[in-house]
Image 1 (spheres, rainbow, N blue to C red):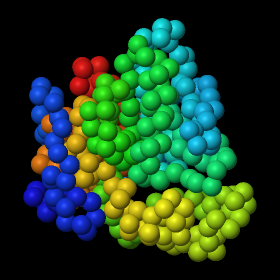
Image 2 (image 1 turned 120 degrees about the horizontal axis):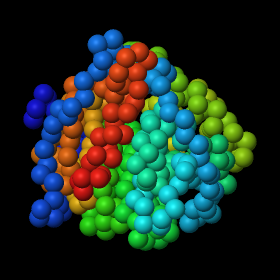
Image 3 (image 1 turned 90 degrees about the vertical axis):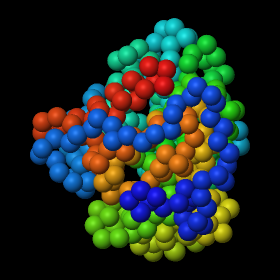
Length: 355
């Protein structure tokens, strides 16, 4: 193991590579890890500063959207936001983005990726998870880090709508975990995608949850997420009274408490630890058959470097890029206040070179 890296399984199971077979096809990517080309600007040292600059300071491109409301197979609704302008040809390549925890099409990383894709003539859209993007739930459920069934119906809807277009998907943080898990579960059946990319993924949710419960992470980030999720939980309780113990949810002090009182019971998990273990994508990475670029900063405050997958943990279809700097969903470059173009350009380059 490198740098005291955790086993390839998630959480404390001790599972190692081999839980799922390596389904990568001959001729696919060589599994390898690279530091990539990212270097932070001199004015922006450290993972916390890089994370906060990406979320709060960096320039955001202007992106306008056309919203569609989609109905899920079980009768709920989600928002699909198409970046403008859309290409006229039905054969134009498609890029669908799955956002992070409490994210939306307005998240800085989403705006940056949509802007880059549209500038290259792609059809680009953000697929919102349930209850996100200001689209209320019709059903008594929400979204969670392992909801690969949700990704499945959305991606299949896109493939059916534009059958002549090469389809690509990207995911950031939670959305990247969902997408990675879907790719591993579907193996060769995921080839409705030409390629995929994920950024700043907590592949091991137990390690990520523990990191967010400590020190500055708890003060800077966990409280921010909690406030947003607790507001949604209060609205959920008004719409679906009695489905959750709202007093416990409101009393949550960290993400473990919230997942223990809301996410886990609402989605059929025994408790928070069962949810984190079952929803982690790390054990599925050896089954990925579609070319996948995984970008992770080793100073990401949300994702301990020791929990990141190593080349031994992934199939030959997965390219790991793990620069020492970058923060969480950030990778800011340029003079103050910086810009977020590094990751979008790297993703589109990966896709356009045929992975």
